[in-house]
Image (cartoon, rainbow, N blue to C red):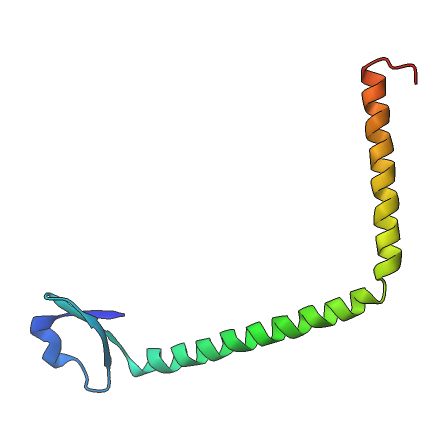
Length: 96
């Protein structure tokens, strides 16, 4: 935003767009900013679309290997539980 005092508002080029104003100042966007802001929004939308497409691609690829990964996670959880129980038993001087 380019901020201009209202007393100097007449010197602002006619192709600039007023965005907001107060009693003291007015704020403007230049044509350069307007065009680049439009381009930035298009790129943001394209980024969202590309990210969604890549996420779906990842999910498709991952679904091919879901069952082996699920089994491995289950085995790791069992081992983690057994190690935790062994650690508690060791700290408490349990005999079993």
